[in-house]
Amino acid sequence: MTTEEHGDQPHGHGHGEHGHGAYDPSNLLRADAFYGGVYQQIADWLNISPGTRALEAGSGAGGFTELLAGAVGTDGTVSALDVTPDLLQTARERVEQSPFKERVTYHEGDIEHLPFDDGQFDLVWSSRTVHHLPDQFAGVKELRRVLKPGGRLALREGGLRSRFLPIDIGIGQPGLEDRLDVAFEAWFHTHVRGGDGVVAYPFGWTQLLRDAGLANVTARSFMLEVLPPLQTVQVEFMSNLLRRWVESDERRGFIIQEDADTINKLLEPNGPKYAFNRQDLHYMEGVTVFLGTA
Image (cartoon, rainbow, N blue to C red):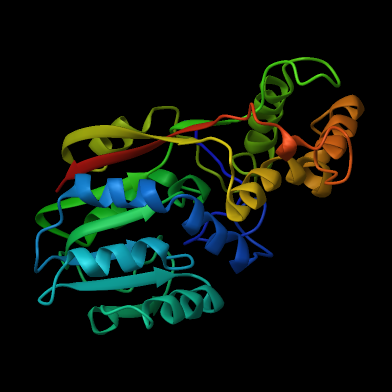
C-alpha cells in the first residue's frame, strides 16, 4: 500500500520522520494554511449534515477540526483526538478563537485504542495517520468500531505526491523530483513500513476499507495547484519539501551528493539559483479521500 507525504509531519498516532519522536506544531499549522482550500472542498464533498456527531482521529493543529465544527451545526459535536497533548492544545487554541468552540471536545488517545464506546459517531475523519500505524488493518477496524450503523469513515491517504519544479532546472541532472520520488519510496519502506512489529497489508486503500467491514466504498481526489506569485506560507511549505532531504540525517542517505548540492543551491535565498525567484514553478498535488459506510 502506498501513501502520499508532505513537507509536514503526520499526526494522530505519532510524529516526526517516521511516526514517532519529535514533532513541530508550526509545520502542521503551515500545512493547515497551505491546504485550507482543499480542506474546504473535502468538507463540502462530505456533505456533513447538521447534528452530526464527528470524530477526528488525529486532529493535529486543528485546521480541519474547525471546518468540522462549523459543518456539524449547533446540534452537532466534534471529538478531536490526538496522541500528543501539545498538539491537542494547539488545536484547542485555534478552535477557541472560532464561533464553534462549544461544539468541540478534546481527547488524548491513540487510533489503535480509541477511548470511545462502540457505535458513537456518524462520521470519522482521519488524515495522513493510518499509514503510520504498525497494523493499518487493525487501526481501520478500530475506527469502524466506533461508527454508528450507516456512519461514514473518511480517510485522507494515498493520492499523488507533489511536484513543482521543471524537469530541467539548469543545475544538476534533469529529473530531480523523479529521483526524490524513488528516494521517498526507499525511505518510506525502510523507516515507516519496515520496522519491527509492522504488519504488511499488500492491497490498496479501497480494499482495506472493505476488509474492515465498510460498504459503498469510494474515493475522490482533489487537485491542489499553486502558481506564482507565491505567498510566504506557500514558499515555506514548498521549501520544506526540499529541505527535509538535506537536513534530515534519516533521509539524506537516500539521495546522491549531486542532488543534495542542487537542493542546497535551490534553497539559498541570495543565490543565483534560488528556486522561489523562478516564475515557472507549478505546484501540483492530488489529495485523495477514501470513504466507506458502516
